[in-house]
Length: 71
Image 1 (cartoon, rainbow, N blue to C red):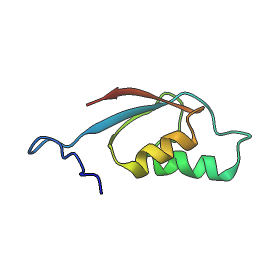
Image 2: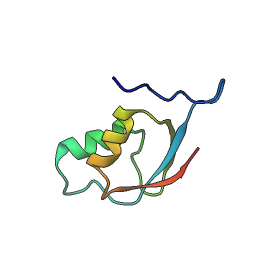
Image 3: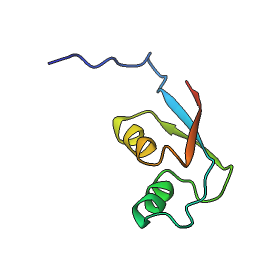
Image 4: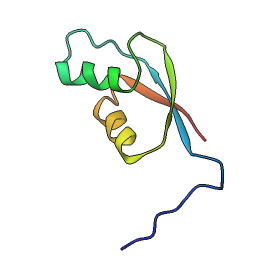
């Protein structure tokens, strides 16, 4: 198996996402994914831990959010 790369001690990698699209007239699963990311209104930003689960959620609603910065 491949080894996981761990971040520097005491420093967790994060990703900041901003909601750029409205969930109106979108499937319920996409609206729930935005809520799961902590987003519910346009132009709100959240800084989240960079995990495969979060990356998958971002990919699911990529047309409604943008990645502002990765640390």
